[in-house]
Image 1: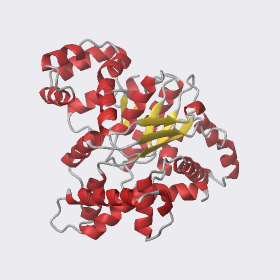
Image 2 (image 1 turned 90 degrees about the vertical axis):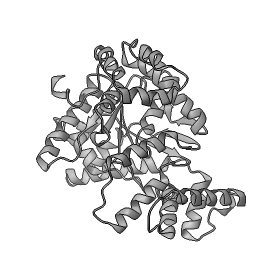
Image 3 (image 1 turned 180 degrees about the vertical axis):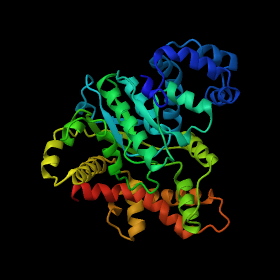
Image 4 (image 1 turned 45 degrees about the horizontal axis):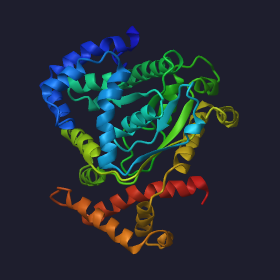
Length: 383
């Protein structure tokens, strides 16, 4: 395991020592106290120091907090397509990405409820702004994806990451979650980066790339949130980048996105598993003139699977009609629903603190966020 020490999640035998270190981090304990406000800090520390393995820690300490979030900040989480998974197999759940923290976290708590093991989770090191955040992430089965590297470093880092993922699937027999692209799709136009597929292939030994990917058991996963509590922060960033092409987010921006994403209301949430793409890979390989075309075809296939499995909510239809000035879906929603959604959008724009706030631009960006899943669903479904 030495080659993976800088990026891997922590093993069971490391958990007591890491949790003890976290108990000595004042900022960490303060954050955990907000999650469990009725527990004295000393009781929290005692509980943290009692865990000897990852799964027990997740089930007894993390699960209650996330279950409470589901109850208070959503209208329930559904899993679909579980029948397409074999609990004896390990999968790469390649997923669209909406929320920095909760996409994988909610998946894990639903897996706990149905008796599946939790998954390892890819997390960018740009989010690990304090040492305790990295420790806490790696205790929670997160492995680290290096960002902001030189071209040479990117190649070396990608190869190590690919080898670690293969190790998790083949040797540890663990499933894992990874986003289909670097960062969230701020406009909800979810597209798989071909570089992700290329990275996954790097650990393969065969000249037949389809064989390399077959061993990884890639399963497209679609996540559908009814509401995105960070929608106004994403719209704000769009205007900031429009007005200043050199705009870069600060560390506090990511922390704010994490906080709002966790504590904001998300409405209904659905996870839909497409099943393994293994049956399609040989055919895609046979259709490809070269490996680059194969990577492109695989990415497009994953996109179709993700797009066709969106749960389309009425607010997606309202956003589509408003954005395109049509009545295409008007029969599916009521006037009250439309007025409520319009009020919601106005309320979200009111939260944006920019000196030269472009209301029309921000409204269009919000509408695009909610319309794009429907746009992509219609294309993928041939409707």
